[in-house]
Image (tube, rainbow over all chains, first blue to last red; front, side, top):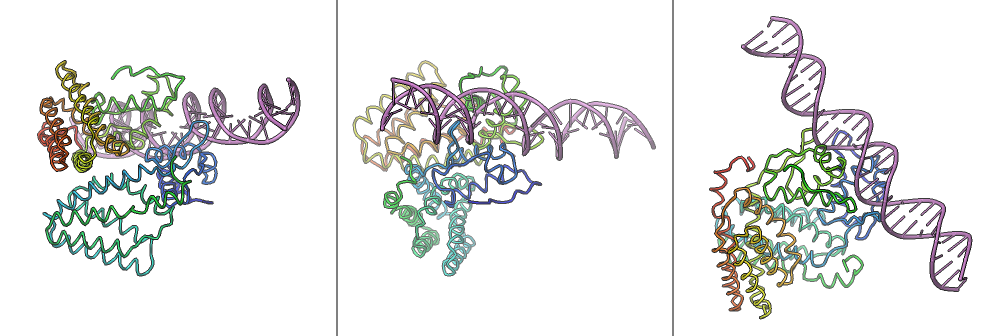
Length: 226
Length: 226
DNA sequence: GCGGGTTTACTGGCATACAAGTATGCGTTA
DNA sequence: TAACGCATACTTGTATGCCAGTAAACCCGC
């Protein structure tokens, strides 16, 4: 976390700052409890305190930072209950979505999902972890959009970011092979036009995702909220 | 929407402004497409532009306002898809919660829920609509907390606010008697320790809540997003 | 009357200045 | 030595000034 990006002064600066800081926090480059200074970041990027401050407000609204008046601004610790809640919400919502989707999915969608899974395999085979995470994101978003609820994904995305934060910080090597197999199982349920099967596959997928979180929590107690 | 509240200068002003504006928007006193001015609000309340501006940023993050640079800040129109998504998410999540709860609910909780429903009846009988809405909020929050997922409610609350906005603006007289009966049906499912019954009751409750939204939308096209 | 360029009064974006609370290190004091 | 008080260097909170961009009223020429 030395230089940071260069600001494009032809564009509004607050969104640039917000996006950069958000990514850095989610990727763990700015770890929980890290202290952020309006003045320092402003100086380093050649802008005043004000836009930095406004970016902090947006981050705080997302639950990524906390402002303690007259004390400082800090990267939020990861709230165990927040992550568990995020997982629970995703399971409830996405399983509902695929159940609906099992009754409406057409062949074009199924082919598209197959192609996505192929790309996921390709990313894994070239050891492109970041690429895989992005494709995983896209897979789930695609399901939401296909169900006609892109707006739902907007909400889920915010929750997913907290989960991704945990993934990055714990530097956990997740079993990509298993994840891809679970994606396949979901598509298989859709192809069979079997709502129960698709739902079960999705629930299994999202349950196992955090199955080892207690272990992570005890291994890295310092990054979690008290 | 004339005077606004008086600011307590011993407390931070931004949260006061934020809360006031948020309530005014949800209650429909600031209707969709209403124009807000940093300068004007600041002058009226005796503060500078800056805190007002920061309150706007927070509102924008919640989807209640939109800032159009060099043009003005406006109350967001109600996004049809956002409201539908909010309803879908609530149904998925809350039905999962009551299903879990049906297996863990103890008598103390059931008694408490009964007492809540009694209070709801009392509010209706004294024509206290605002009181009923607050009690409705509390009923659903209570279920989430009892399931051990208070953090889930934090998310649902944000979604609920968009739905409440619609309620207020359409000035719709909802059938409180039916709502209370549905609450009773949910508690009955819990008392029977029957997850399927409880889930079905919750889904019915949350589905019928917006069943007449298309009608509202065609009656008030001006308050919705294009 | 009507079309088109220009002025003017606004808007929010950003920079800067000042105010007030907090942490910290040091010196004094009991 | 330990506890206290205080100077000092931070922090964020708020106010204000300036800028660029927008939009609508305006004036002028036709």
